[in-house]
Image (cartoon, rainbow, N blue to C red; front, side, top):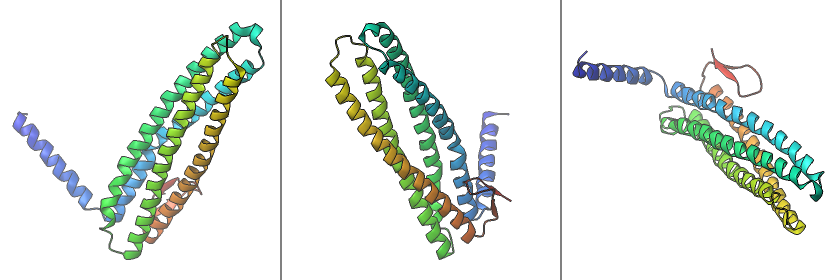
Length: 227
């Protein structure tokens, strides 16, 4: 096929794709974007599980460190170095997790331009409410991720401090206090994020119901399938 013919084929394919999309109602197109956004977030769930496993490993190492005294400084150094390696893996996973959420948001935001195409005013209001909740959820996630990244940086600094033989106890105590304060922020933001996730799932369910989309729910989670 000539270059011109190849380009023509691409144009025709694109037009057919656009025609296929335009044949769907605004409700159906919104449904497709919502479900695609959730599919993209499967990467986030995978990273979450891996981060939890790394946290357990790190906690075990930290517990071993606090049981040692300065006469066992070589062991403290060795364990601290292991912990630093785990913390660096957490940093990497947090970055990958954020990329999954950013990709999900990019897909989800395509819904916004479709809301005005909804003919039923009630359906439009439910779509707007659902959209606003999800955007707030994304914003809360970024705050959570930023706070988590800060705490991971603090953890790394702590283990680097423990590599120093001449280390003041007050310095360690002060660092731990700052770290614990950050942990409290993570817990609060995580609770907010989880609540917004539940609110979004309920808002999405309501939108599907009022828009008469033929969607069935397998259970009370956000798993759903189009019949």
